[in-house]
Amino acid sequence: MEWIERAPAKINLALDVLYKRDDYYHELEMVMASVDLADHLTFTPLEEDEIRIYTNKVFLPVDTRNHVYQAVKLLKDRCGIKKGIKIEIDKKIPVAAGLGGGSTDAAAALRALNKIWDLQLSVEELIAIGNQVGSDVPYSIVGGTAFVSGRGEIVRKLRPMPSCWVILAKPRLSVSTKTIFRLLAVEELQHKPTSRIVAQAIEEGDYERMCQNVGNALEQVTFNKHPELRKLKDRMEKYGLDGVTMSGSGPTIIGFSRNTSRIKRVYNSLRGFCEEVYMVRLLNEE
Ligand SMILES: C[C@@](CO)(OP(=O)(O)O)[C@H](O)COP(=O)(O)OP(=O)(O)OC[C@H]1O[C@@H](n2ccc(N)nc2=O)[C@H](O)[C@@H]1O
Ligand SMILES: Nc1ncnc2c1ncn2[C@@H]1O[C@H](COP(=O)(O)OP(=O)(O)O)[C@@H](O)[C@H]1O
Image (tube, rainbow, N blue to C red; front, side):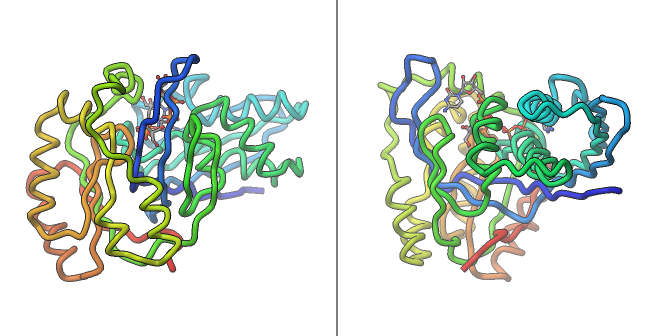
């Protein structure tokens, strides 16, 4: 028996950093949504008690460093599972891009194995396991449009985002989330928090207000390190998108439009000088 689970990429419409915590993580408020750029995980049960991972991206680790491996190991230990599993990860989401690829793969593995092994764990129980793998995994277990806070483990579902096109522009550079948070001096942030306004706009189905308030506190740090990203964002703003911001710790810059011919023009223009460009829809929209 084979089981296939889809693992969609996430975007951060808003990301505010409230303060640095005593555990060295940061207290965040974010608005996140899932888009239809996705990895696919294929699960095949094994008789031997082993976790075997394969992926089409040769540079990705398939051992204990893979987020999927970590999630499966925690799940097996928690539930006393002695069976094995083979997992083939077909990666489509760019790696280290601010699109949550590793986290969504880990969440997909937890969701799928909860069914395959008939563990009957609740979403809260899966979130508690996912939180040990990474801060973005709890959101990825739930998916869709959500207000996310704490370290990332408090997930409140929002109404589906107003329907629109999303452009994802990923230049040829990878960003380490850990490095960006290390370089962040919260007291020097000039960013005005907007997550609550964006969440409210979504609840009211107000597309324009949502777009006007997208923003990301980490831009200040990531743009300082990679000034070409500021230029990319400026260029996307000039193309007449309704809202432009960075996703996660970067480097992917995202933009919104409801106008299909405009988004196609933006897509074609960006492809000239940006390594990877995607024109995507939201996974669940109003
Ligand atoms: C910034 C965000 C926004 O969605 O996304 P990405 O850029 O990774 O996509 C996430 O919060 C990233 O989540 P995730 O990538 O799972 O982070 P983790 O592995 O838990 O942490 C990586 C590093 O980021 C820092 N970190 C992460 C989350 C948080 N609330 N405070 C932090 O300071 C910590 O230094 C940690 O060592
Ligand atoms: N299944 C996985 N998919 C992608 N990256 C993974 C995976 N497992 C571990 N990683 C590691 O996680 C790091 C962050 O990758 P990723 O999750 O794509 O970043 P981001 O959250 O910024 O989009 C990379 O250095 C990568 O080697």
